[in-house]
Length: 446
Image (cartoon, rainbow, N blue to C red):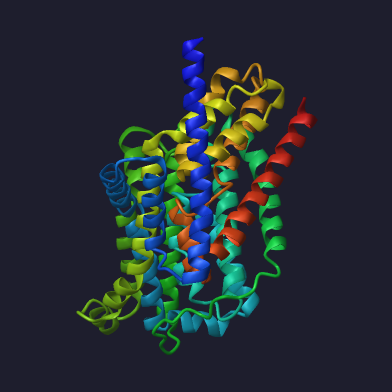
């Protein structure tokens, strides 16, 4: 009795902390709307507010914030810088101008969305969106709508289609067949992408074309940009395939080399070198000089780097508090008759409270393993559907504790309160539609 009472009190405390997180998200939206506070400062305000509201020592908050800030920049910072540098090099070399002269407005949009679909298969959502920066430079109008759609394509691919890391991680834990999951995941992603296009059809444009130092069209530089983008996307996708436990590309040392291809610093070097090699010796020399194109690109990337790092700091503060784990464990004891709703809800809540889709996926899948039988999912199709429910739920609620949210805001020209409506809201509706399709599939295959 005493133990049950103690657990009940702990649960109420952590539920209160979950409501505090929701209140802080609302506060950040209000601050962004009314006072136009820098994105970098908003996660800091949220982390400090969480500490004050929960009575946590602010030195503990600061230590964990610093740890998350550093880890996030180490994991994704080089990918963001790589995208910005390649975008600036593409503009200054004349590659973007050459592409614009050859492609219609619809052709540029198609190229951007196709790039998002391919990039979404590999690495993580931040890296996938970051390396699309050169393609955003092609857009001259309706940038907000196209950027949002690209982000939602990445979200759909990351959560539904093998070899993206989230479904692979869930399948590995739950023992699902990745081939079956691939067959189910493709229509799932297509539904989510179509829904995102429909939901964003009336979004007001908040941004103009990218302010990049453009140059006269250059055919060779345009070839270099094509090579750079192909190399970057291929590296991300190969990295994701390498994470497949079935080791389709080989194991041991070969697998380790493939995994290293997706490191952000590798993306940075490969993308810049591929474009410089086609841009001419004169342009390459000027680009690397002090005050040259690369120096300007580094300065241009500072704002989003700090915002993404600060989101990682807030994410670490919430993760080390442990509130997400207790809340999702409480969800895990809901009636088993809910079937696929349990793995979906576990991952969704984990993502919302602690920000990391991969952590949410691993945690939710681990909790689902013992109850696959009671949930009626202990068969090949059930395991594959449960894995997709987890990975879909893990992509459902990007918000202020997620660098992907801030990177999408930056690419689309949205402020935080607008991002909560268009990014978080669209991703949530996407996930619900995906979940409904998974339930329908389960009914059909029984």
